[in-house]
Image (cartoon, rainbow, N blue to C red; front, side):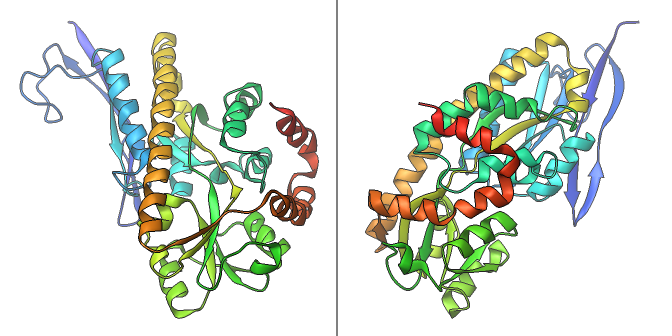
Amino acid sequence: MNKRSIKIGGAVLLAGAVITASFSFFHKENPSDSLFSSGEQAPEYVFTYADNQPDDYPTTQGAKKFAELVWERTEGRIKIKVFSGGEMGNENEIAEQVQYGGIDFARVSIMTLTDVNPKFNVLQLPYLYRDETHMWKVLDGEIGDEFMNDLKGSGAVALSWYDAGARHFYNTKRPIERVEDIRKMRIRVAKSDMMAAVVEALGAKAVPLAYSDVYAALETGYIDGAENNWPSYETMNHYEVAKYITLDAHSRIPELQLASQATWDRLSEKDREIIKQCGEESATYERQIFTEREQNVRDRLIKAGCIVTELSPAEQIRFRSAVMTVYQTYCKDYIDVVNRIAQVQ
């Protein structure tokens, strides 16, 4: 009897509980299954893809492009269902589920991978890149490939680098034109020891705070400022209560599109090549729409009354010099990698 194997993989977080759905079963040709419409040819594999950002965010749009490309290139043999908006958990939970095989594909910040390999701290260092062009030359080159390979043995396979934009400081008090202007401000940081160290090195007070609480904290004066990229600055409406934004680009933390090693091992070499290529093409698409969104948001918020400050070249040097202690504290074992990044032209 001719049978066809169908793989359904993934994990869904409901009410805080992880429900892992990863199972295999067989169908005869022309199977009748509730997952597919009557007469529709069932794919050989159905995989899950998790992204904690909203449905219209660039990374989620990149995920959808990835799923679309894989479906087309495999002629419907592989279907990838994208879950956005944190349906499958926060980024740390998603990264763990990818490693354990509960989620098949995902996009996560490299901040979630530093416990897997502390070398990833290098890519979080403040003022690491000269500009966006420098960053992509690094990540799309030999150094970026080395970081991807460093995930071997972790339970995850790196497919491509996604953009998360540049992060800038914004506040309720005044334009930040010099290092002195940020001193003594209370700046919200995510739960990241490195980012807290960056803020403290600049002479400000780091205040760890949940992302969802930032607006109220800015509005009430509990904090004076925060830091994030342009899309998040708009999406969370922080610009309404913190109109001063300084384009210091202190952080350009890239993100990785991952496949679970457990899922990867079940695929043929041909399908791996297809998925890898689709991941790279989806990254090109995601980077383009992220750049467009950054510019559109900037234009809108300037019209809305935001005051934008750009640091002079001399002040850029001063800001970078102020945080050099962070390099020694968090990446002293990887200074050679930092130097190689600096030398990329």
